[in-house]
Amino acid sequence: MTTTLKGLRAAFLVAPEGVEQVELTEPWRAITEAGAEPVLVSTAEGPIQAFNHLDRGDRFHVDRVVDDVSAADFDALILPGGVANPDQLRTHRTAVAFVREFFDAGKPVSVICHGPWTLVEAGVVVGRRITSWPSLRTDIVNAGGDWVDQELVRCDCGPSVLLSSRKPADLPAFCRAIVEELVTRDVAR
Image 1 (cartoon, rainbow, N blue to C red):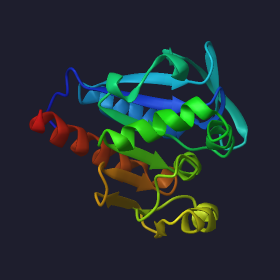
Image 2: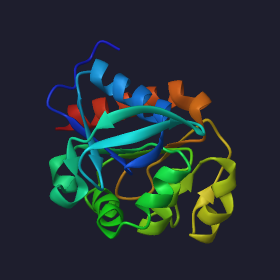
Image 3: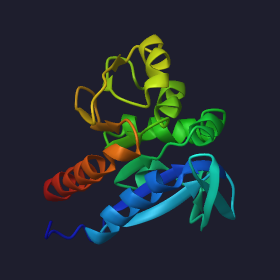
């Protein structure tokens, strides 16, 4: 893609430990290459510990703490997975409120793997078509979502576009969709 998304900012919301590394780094690379600015937001200052499935991966420096930002500071939200990451986020009241703000503001949200647990906690999956790691199906259905098993799902039936994917193997389609959605948002500005 030959576009530049200069001036657009995307928040990557993660817990201090447990994010699936490739689900953080691949979307980060994709939007950076397209010219957007990724911002690592977490529930605490300092580095976060990423994982490669169950093995420790790299550490990444947090740019902003969720208590000090709002959806108004960003153009989009990206929620990487990893089992422990969204499990921690969904217990953090400010993180859940931050996620809800993006939906209320009509800003695009992208989520992969176990990331939808945070969406369930935020109460934003009702009536939404969404995919995830298969073990979240019951949680999503019980929260009022329409779970499907597809590489990429784009749901625009609410105030904001919701992009979702199941697993790391879906990352090429997921990353393309994020960049395309940011291009669409940039053109509309």
